[in-house]
Length: 325
Ligand code: ADP
Ligand code: MG
Image (tube, rainbow, N blue to C red; front, side, top):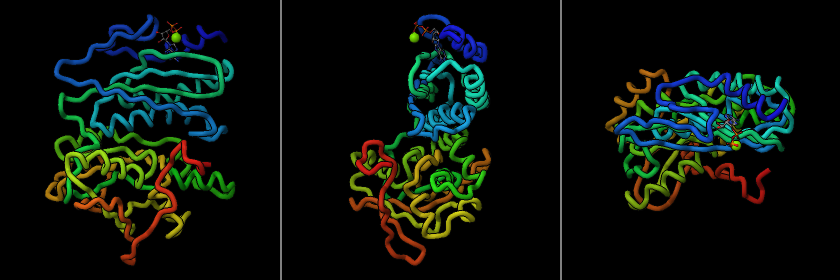
């Protein structure tokens, strides 16, 4: 297959949308941003062997390449609209491509997200997606709004993807549920939208709770003054599958620093607890409070179920750390 027929295969599956004046096929896409909206743009790259095991099913790679971007839109409380796809493929394998597109469009179609362009090149397998969405001007939920006294919340459950990855690395028995959470994360778009006007700060959990909550503290200090967080391990939302596969304390590092959760972590005034539970249950997304913010610059303190401080060996995934596997 030539580059043109690859693009043709991709283009055939892209839908139309009224705000896409011109999608795939011209030199660039031409898009109409609705009046009164701000454009929200994000990009993430997945590299084979770094972000997913080489043997990952192509449909799962397609799903995940988009999911990690939609998770960023969710964390801004944005409504998804358009995306572009840069594909670097080792060869022009139409079976692989169609399976990849099955996963990609299964998720895109759920959110009425339309593919409007991209680039196709040859090389080691790597996928870059940009996702574009919008928010009412001024309504985005940023990382920098956390305040002392806020409750710290998280959606869904923590540590499942990291548990699935740990099982895959160990090569022994594995849980299909954990592997599914690694390969097919659910971007929390509806939850992000439901939290407008309720959450003070929000981030999606890609690198691990400790690292990502650290980003919120750091971003919020200029406005809030010194901020510290106290997290309680006894409150961590834990799936049945993770609890069955990993006992305490072995699962805590997976839940606090494993990464790839793609859940939302947000902070909000304690008075909003009922309103938040109602807003999230309306979109069927579970969420729970796992700690509190306070004044003081002591960073994140983690308390174990016996009330003692717990120290993580590492805080989260970092590509440029010396000891990153
Ligand atoms: P150019 O040389 O102008 O960059 P290309 O041949 O790269 O043009 O692309 C032609 C059209 O196909 C453009 O509209 C581009 O956005 C689209 N396109 C190329 N690769 C992809 C892809 N992987 N996914 C979606 N659209 C793509
Ligand atoms: Mg090009």
